[in-house]
Image (cartoon, rainbow, N blue to C red; front, side, top):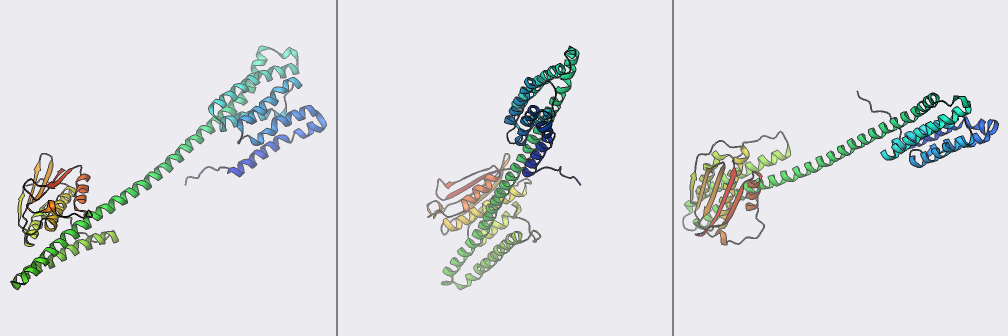
Length: 382
């Protein structure tokens, strides 16, 4: 099992810096009281700023570098506090920007050369040779370079981790947004299905009921077929509603096939049985996807429902379905008064048609027919 690397929290980092500073200051106490008070004060000035090295890395480095620069003026031998300088260089490279890190590296390498000359002079003037100065400068400079390298690697790794975290958060936000959009789209789809089923079924029932009531006055015998159509249409609508509501309640709910192009003749026969004269021209259509077939069926179904609701009594409908190039063309027209019928603005039929056709990158044209009536024409890419 992969284990996450151990990390210090903000409080742990503060205590670590305090402990580091205190440990480095422990050897300073004998200098202050028993060895050399000047060296002790100088060591105190070089080490104590490290307590704030994470919060103010540049200021801490400047303070340590300034105290270190004073050292050659006061003595010519190394001090325990020299270890504070590479720590300050590491802090700048780790917690400040790349430019400050390069400046700290250059300052450290320059200081390494100065320290080599100063210390060799303290050991003896005869040791001031090019070979000795170079050897000492390289040795001291290695501390600076290693500290700078470790700090730069730490800063680069932290930037990489921060980028991964930011990317993960962004992907999580996008996932939530996509889930919300998918839920909205699913609600729209369910609303379209519910509208198509309810509107078609109830329209047929209302038309048949009104016709049966009017006919019952003159010939009660004609009410039998009308009532039979009402009953069968109601049962079909209830079955479809139960199917959709079952899908919403449980994923394992039983399903039935969605309407297809082969179901169009039955839909037209149902409209004729309800008393609407329907002329049909159904050309052979090649195999299409389930989505295209369902969209075609629903457009014909909704258009016929609109004819019943708006075209007026005695209106005739014409349905044509065929293939034109790489698209299915669906046209439903009537000769009634649908174009002049009152529209309360709350209908979802035409809006649902447009949404279905747009989902397949198709086009939908609706409006009054030149000779009267209303026409719905949809072009759906295969």
